[in-house]
Length: 423
Image (cartoon, rainbow, N blue to C red):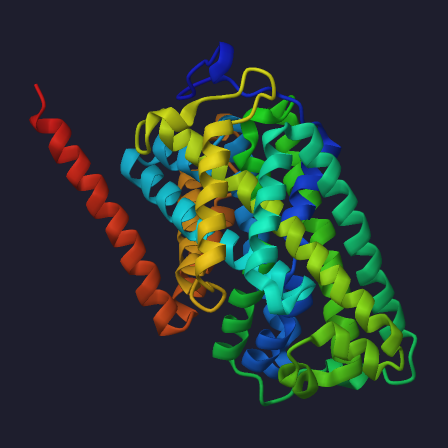
């Protein structure tokens, strides 16, 4: 296949994931801690326009997912948009996407690990976070089969908890349809900011594309798995948003720090609140598992091209995983989780994710009809949406994100200059 080197022996990952497994990985990435927490800040931004923000996020997510699926079918290798940008736009754009993803998502891993710790044992959040990182790194190290098995269990339990929340809210006497109406107080800027917040909560469908080298029959499986996982996730998010709004209203939802726990209390089911907390902890664990998985595969791809130390390109001969990359990422995340609280300082990760998807859409635009190009409006709308969401973020996030990408670009330029001087 054009642009994708053939890998043999210990350098090649094994194609073990079928359609159901790929969908489970996508669901585990998207139905994470965000669904338990994202609606409160989104309601603060959009007010009664919260559902409009969710719809806008869904449209852009659909475009990104479609572009990613078509590209992944064409280039079924580890690395996701790093590979697509390199092959379609040039080495620099692929590198920039990979750099933003690895740096931003490594910080996100540490933040998610601390979220697990805060849910499980707030007084020892750092200790629990490190233990979670170590445990999940071991799961990933021992092979994709175990990773899928663990993810499947987490997704099943989290979806069951969310179903209980939705049922409790919508069947209570506190639910009122009038609370779903959009009032004159909703602004376009607020809806866009809410869309950006909600977009990040379910943007994990790219994990399927990042694992392209481990999917069986990728040209057929990936284009089916990505939209299926996204569609199921959107149904879950829409149901939860409607249930929480119907009980709490936009104003009440904006004021809470634990929206789903407060929603079940308001619905007259306070006994469900501990279950919601446990579900949130498990969802955060699932997100962390998928994040480590995605970062290690992008690290593998960049190491193969020597943008990162080439030793990280090694694949375990027995478990068929990028074991060195996984161990290094796990170690870095564990150190960060033990020494710093990054939960309030990863705005650059949000900015970087949107740049990552913008490059994916720009790459999809260059596909020919024979290569499976989606309708032109899809990558165009996806690209415009990503850039709009990116610059609708708080100024601190935009500045931090731009600084991280600029540092990566400077490193790329310096490495190119050094190589040019070599004989």
